[in-house]
Length: 277
Image (cartoon, rainbow, N blue to C red; front, side):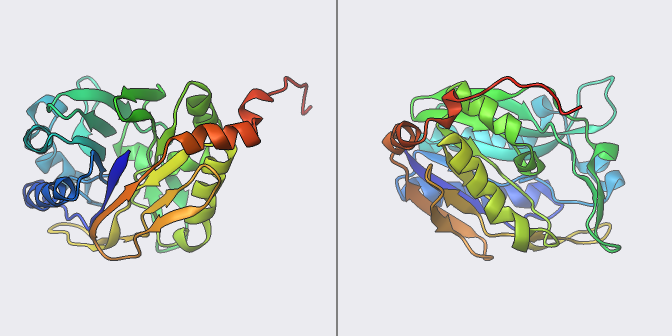
């Protein structure tokens, strides 16, 4: 599987963001990528709910989605929009944080709505209440593709190991963790969490990330940690994209998944137990 990891500094303007992303996707295709993966909230990084309500659309009416579909069909490359901020179908009034897997013929092959909401107070200056604006999903998603089997997750999900174990036991070979990770936690938690998820499951982990300071026409600017990573099933860091936006292409040998699981077959060693009281 030849994978392109797109590291972005998306703004709060979806129309400007799609132009940049399409150019990067064409660059990835030119480097022979079979699938390209983008970070969380690829279309719009915003801290302003009123602005989001103005610029976001439901999936079926979203020009960003149709733009990605057109570029996937144009290049013959699979595209994982790591996530897009979208309006939900009524009666839900909150948005959804949705990963869309688009096939090489431009069709939507899988959808995953982020399950775990980032409701945290990292510091007095850095507080998030994702659940106030976004409705959580409730379904884990495994995507069968000609390239391999993907388990779809998003950012804060990475702290909930049971999701990744369930995806791996259902057949995932590659776990995707697109993110807009907090700079307040990133230096300590980002890489160890991703390595743990890879080691526990014997999967490749591909984690495209937002990076830097995100331009905002309205509201305060958000900052993200960057450092998109690709981790092997043995826990080795195969790619670290640093903090600069760009396209990074890497080949994954999926036979390493079976080899790691043969050496440490932990996915078959579950035990039922009682307690704790």
